[in-house]
Image (cartoon, rainbow, N blue to C red; front, side):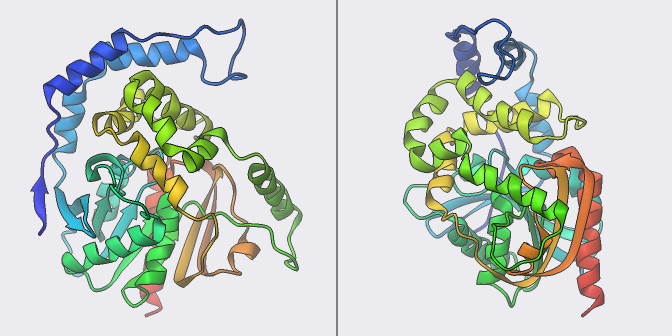
Length: 360
C-alpha cells in the first residue's frame, strides 16, 4: 500500500535540539589550526549558533511539504519517496537516488527542469531520513535496487531510467542489473574506476588513476569508521547534534567545488534530517554492508564527471564494465552536483536519455 506522507516534526524534538546545542561541551583547539586537525572550531561554533538561533526548520518543512511525499513498505522496510509526475503522460520515468551524507534534498533544484520531460521518483535510501532506520543486516546497494524495482512496479512504471551519485550511483547501476528489462538506461555523476592491467591510458587518465590509488591506500577516516564500526560512531552522532553537524558539514566543505554556493540553510536542512530521524547509525551501515567490488551493469550508461568530485572516472576503465553511451566532463561542480550545479546536471541527464530514446 502506498500512503501519502506529510513532514511534521514534533515541537518537542526541535526544542530538544535547541537545548542540546545550547549546552554543547566544546573542545579546545591549537592556535592557527586551520583544517590541519579537522573541522575548524570557529566555523563550527558559527554554524551551531545559527542552527540554534537563526535557522528555521518550520520554514524548510513547509517548503518541503509542497512536494508530493509518500511512503510504502517493501521487504519489511518503510520507504519514503517523492513522486512528481510530468505534465506529459507519456514521459519516461526516472528514479533519482541520493548518497551519503545526502538525502532526497539533493534533487530539489533539478525537480522543476527534469519534471518538464520526465516523471520523477525520488526515494530516501532505507536507513536514511524519512525511510527511517533499517532493522536487519543486508541492506546493501543490490537489495536497495530490488526495492526500487518493486517501488517502480507498484507505481505502474514498466520502463524507466535511473540516475544517482555516490551510493545513488551504485544503487542505480545495480538497478540496471536486477531489472534490465525495465531500466532503459542509467546516468551517474560518480563512477569509481579501479586500476586494471592491460588498459592503455592517456597521461591525464594516469593522473586520475594516481589520485584513485592514493584514495584507496589512504581510506578516509569517516569511511573507515562507518564501514568498520557504524554502531560505535552512531552513538556519538545520535547523541550530539554538534557531532552530527561536524561529521556532515566537513564532507560538504571537502567535496564541493569552492565556487559552489550551497547555502547554510540547505546544508542544515540535510543535517537536520539525519538528526531529527535519528538515522546516523543506520545510514552509516550502508558503508558496512555494501561490498567494495564493482559489478557490471548490462544497460546503457551515461557518465557526468565533475572536476571537483572525490575522484574522477577514467573512461577506458569504465568501458571494461559498462556500456558507455554518453560521457561528459565539466569544469565546475563537485560531489553534490545536483545541489551545486543543478542546471548542468539536469541538461546532461536530458541529453543522455533523449539520445537513448532517439536510438529506439
